[in-house]
Image (cartoon, rainbow, N blue to C red; front, top):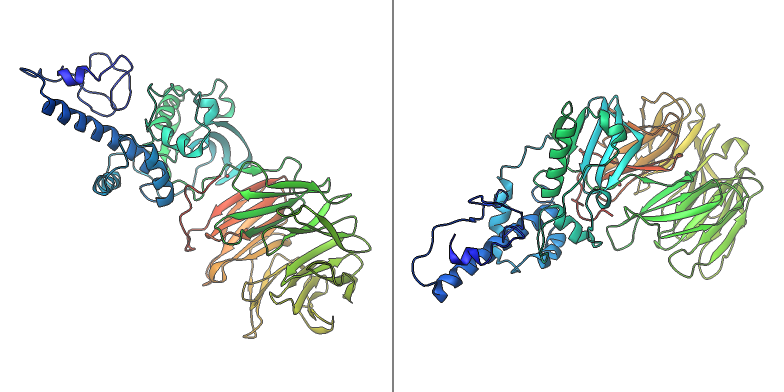
Length: 534
């Protein structure tokens, strides 16, 4: 052993990666030479300085590689996260040339090949992600809502609380630690995972997940191991224990964040910032079940309706104040906030119009639409036109004076409806399982079939993409350029909300409280790895 190396190879382990060693000539993990030829003669300052520089470069490269993996490289690199993680690199920050060399190496390293498809065979699948280990049953390509999960806190003792530090350590970084990473352990009670027919990892090359995968392969020799690409974002499934009766999704103003507001059977409303584990706010707003919610355009308040007939405005991110905008005689069936105006539709077959501001100017009835037309409601972005749907089809109403502008689709019962962002396309989900789309500017119409029951949710995405859900909980997608409709999956309960996020993913929320993200490959979207909080 060279004198310089003898001074740094301590009983704690390799001086580069801290991996314990015995009499090996080189570290099994990082290949640092542990036993080299002796240096003849005196160890000069120049020899010592050269050794120190070589050791510092090796430590920096190992940490930088871990930081790059933790930031999603290769494939979905998040430069902002990488910049933060570089603060954890020993002897850093790394020179730009050194960083570029590490990133190039990761593009062509010897980590296991990642399969492009995410389709899974039927059986029990145990999946390793940035959240930990998850075991679920797959039937006909659809994952059951119920799953057993073990977070990394359970699998690895004393993990840092900071998210960046956690990812850095999981990816194999050392940073300022002085001892080796504690041994990762598989769960004491594997439960459903004991019968796993497939082991999945979305983190190829990450040191700690690779150790866990190796241990599971030993314990479950009958299971086949595969590597799949990480989903974007990488959330754990979000579940609201009390269930969801109404859901709305929207983007946070001036950020890339996504907000979700959900109503519950007990009258409470909860707002989340996806995919953060703790809600932003929660409050009981109604005496009974919440029937509809809508996030206001300011990103700081939510409008709700309930079985008690009340329409309320809750400033959850501001003063916290709750105001009653109007009352309906019976349930509030639907509401929509557009252009500073809230339109609500009740069992009393009336549309109420409430103008928001320092005070509510008018929360009274706008018009009576008829008992058969009191199911679904939408409004244009300028609040000048209101669309109402029901068993007698769809109708257009003036949003300022309540006059009837026209009727269409009279032969079909409308169970859901939505306007595209530019107010040009109108999609009507109907009780016969067909979605009828109308081009309000071009006077065209077409149908999208495939559902086996009434269509309860419709949502427009980028480029005219259309997502739909029916009574069975099945989610379908059709690209804006037409073509076949694709079945994305299903919920075990009726879907209460459906929306596209700004980065091109589809969000669905079921009555059982389960919220899912569906990657839609045909849509252009920004990479969001590192912004997760499913």
